Image (cartoon, rainbow, N blue to C red):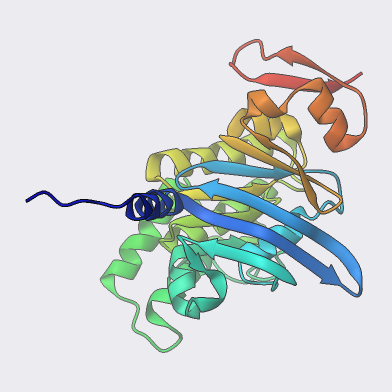
Amino acid sequence: MGLNVSAAQKASRLDSTAENAQAFQVDNIGLMVDQTTILKDVTLSFPKGELVALVGHNGSGKSSLLKILARQQPATSGIARYAGQELSTFEDRAFARSVAYLAQDIGTGADMTVRELVSCGRYPWHGALGRFTDLDRAKVDEALALTHIEAFSNRMVGTLSGGERQRAWIALLVAQDSQCLLLDEPTAALDIAHQMEVLSLVRKLSHEKGLSVIIVLHDINMAARFCDRIHALKGGQVVASGSPHQLVQRDTLRQIYGIDMDIVPHPGLSVPLAYVC
């Protein structure tokens, strides 16, 4: 006798499948700080395995949203989920094993060697008093290799260039063996060559290791070149969301940035380039 599946059961299964396809999902997220609205009714999806950029002008709420996703800042209203589970219900170590966060201002680690810094990524797996195992060492070695900083492993972090230092911190996240990376302006204060180097590395890690990555960026052209999807915020609200080709349009860019911009095709890549008129 065949099993008769109700419409409600089918809908539930479809909802579950869609939910499982998302790394993060935020619904009607709001944030108030000192009676100032930072975020308002933000609803967005961040698919698994994609490199997704958050763009917008200064003060648009990008970093605040990332902090909410990283559980560094509680939302005032709305619901944020990771892998279908509300963020507030995660145990700290379980969440840290799955999601790694790199803040914009990194003021520590200069007096450590690169290997010591990257080894800190294993903390969620063994704790402060746990023994550093062969598996931990293997994960650190893998992270150093994937980020191409093996040659710097015994250097002090404080002696590295800006790009090398960012690669060391990204290696720490890779050693954490997480499934999702949250990066807050990892290219800030880097020259163009080091920006390309860091973003190429992040894209490679996302696509080759299947990592979900959410990255805050200022440069719309860098976002279009390296990211699979772009979400744009303005005044704490979502104003545009889609693929680089969908987002890098004259009217959309004016809505995001408030200035006239023109679009040309990239001469060597199938991505659009925006410039101020």
